[in-house]
Amino acid sequence: MNNLVPVLPVLWNVVLPVFLVVGMGVVLQRLVGFDISGLSRPVFYIFSPCLAFASLYTLDLHAMHPLRSVVFALLVALFMGMLGIFLARVSGHSRSMRSAAVLTLINNNTGNYGLPLNQFAFGVPGLQIAVLYFVINSTLANSVGVYIVSAGRARPTEALRNVLKTPLVYATLLALLANGFHITIPAPLFKAISLSGDAAVPTMLIILGYHLGHLGTQIHWRRTLPISLIKLIIGPLVAWGISIFMGFNGLMQAVSIVQSSVPTAVMSTVLATEFDCEPEFVAEVVFTTTVLSLVTLTTVLTLVKMFILR
Image (cartoon, rainbow, N blue to C red; front, top):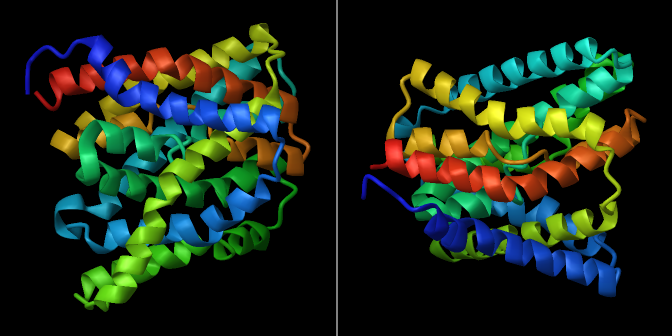
């Protein structure tokens, strides 16, 4: 690969296609105002689990070292969470605002943003690795995220129940078992699973566009911009440093950094609303980080291709 990768081709060929599909979701929400559950439920119960299964089943687990990926994701989340607590305390924010700040920094949109981004940038091999981080982040969002936004009010069993209700978890476990024990999946069944998984990425982008169109554009920049810049600028630097510390290289390092550089997940607004933890602020951060990521992720991808995949 060339030592120097111009920014414009990365923006044109990788980032812009993602935003164009997201824009379709925004336009659809504004013009039609459809029921989002008609899309989100198939993604939650069918498409995402099938994508996770198909990707993890064909993944070379010995080369991937899943445990290292889990440790990497936890270290990045821990470091970013500490930054959120520090910023909130320095700014004199309330306890609920501190929880909201931490949530926005650790809950990455590795699904309906990160998956297509890595697919466009690195092809199917990149998508397979990205799915692993999507599974890890989804588990964190449905367990640690609940504790954070509930500010200590959640019972220990509540987060566990949320994890156990997620089909993605079961698809992941089944795929890892089938992969590890070399169980052959019948061809018609695996083709059906793969076909269903292929529907996940474009549908996720439409859902993201719907939520962004629903959020609106009234942003309190004084409180939103600092946390957004930490998320999009400090986050990639933290991930890059931790990836070097853990000895990552090549495509594994590239995808790990990119998945740690994506905006705040839309799921954060769901959790913040459910537990009344500064939902307006969280929604603003989701919107702001998504829009600004057009610039920041283009830069991250360019640097990754220049210095890691050269």
